[in-house]
Length: 245
Image 1: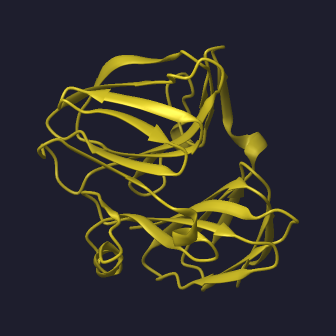
Image 2 (image 1 turned 45 degrees about the vertical axis):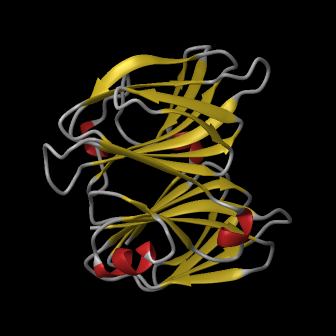
Image 3 (image 1 turned 135 degrees about the vertical axis):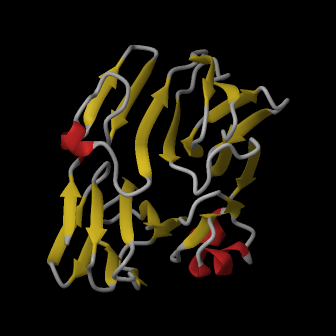
């Protein structure tokens, strides 16, 4: 079963200082029928204006994954971390027993666009932790690069490629697929797949049929066959694919 959620179907939140597109219930968007996909609770596409940001705020018992698409994001937290995250950087923060953090755009003239994904952890009350990694383009060009890995067999294999660790049985892959190039993803029947297209156009093929995705579109897939992904436009297709229980 595959469900395509178009960019237009997401909930738009525009506060002036930040523009967000919510794929699931979040903040001022309440929809009990769209609260999560497996352990994925939030998938937010944020654009933060120059010199703006979130003030320090708390989190508990969440695995928070961020990926900077463009611009620079500044992260500060109660664990003593202060980090500038450039475009192409992935970040994982395990909130566990409790952590406070702020996210700001230090630029005077350039917005920062970043994805932020929230996952339920495999265990509660874990010790808070933080890690980040700048991912070079050749690592994910025309392939699925495991930027964040959890505890399944598939994820443990991914850790060999220096992916960031997450306290949940998920693997987040990053890919930039050049025009006309194809990739296959063998989905296990008991697993879920969430695919989000950041840029470009992508064609998905599976037993359910063919589906065309444009920027901001997502596909939620369960109990399907192997996925074939083809970059269908003149520009590369950049996307995140999440394998989760």
